[in-house]
Amino acid sequence: MAKVLAFANQKGGVAKTTTTLNMGVALQEMGYKVLAVDMDPQGNLTMSLGLDPDQVRPSMYDVLVNGVGAEQALLRRELDVVVSSIDLAAAEIALSSIIGRERVLSKALLPLHDRYDYMVIDTPPSLGLLTINALTAADAVIVPVQCEYLSLRGLAQLEKTLELVRENLNPKVHIAGIVPTMYDSRTVHGREAVEVLRQNFGDLVFSTPIRKTIKFAEAPVKGESVLKYAPDSQAANAYRQLAREVLSGKKI
Image (cartoon, rainbow, N blue to C red; front, side):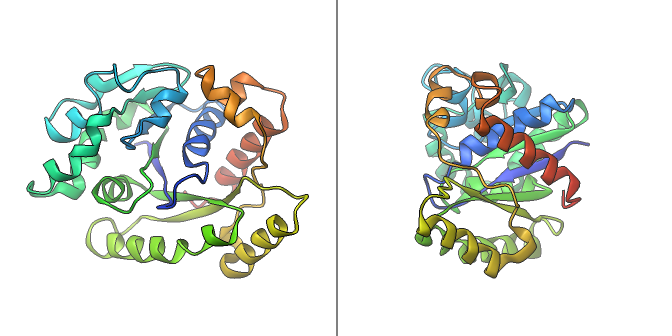
């Protein structure tokens, strides 16, 4: 059975998609079979792999709402990916009347579990039904957090949501760790934000911060991970180091 990692933070713009993609590729470089799952209606993960969310059909919407097999929405790119389209924005309404609506993703991914070692799920910047589905399907959650004060405040809300998911839907799900992203060591604010994270969350904060670099903006334009676009860059090596840290921590 594949280990399922959900990348979640209800705040947008924290490098969630970047972290999902590059962590997945780093795991793949280590020899693991990895499936990426795009649960965000914006389709940023799908786009980052060189696909057009406006063109892909069937997509995750069809999987969740119309009962289409996840394999039919799976495309092989740098990572195998179950694609997203803008239709997914309507899924929360469509799912709201379905019994067991929080477990639809978990059931949809079940036939693919024996093909992969890891599944990495990119979630929307909200704590709605799509994110709840991802948390219900997941073994562990990795939380990318931008190194700014306001980004730290949303973690308490995410923890409360996780507690509810544990009590009612998925007892095993837990936070595997927090990834400081968009880190700029040259600024006092950046260094202080990481320090506040460590004071509040201790060992949950991975020791590998992801620094700001233009490479993260350039790579999706090419439809590639930063590990493929700039394999020898500091950015690529940071995600390789993070992947090693995640695996060595035994929290997943």
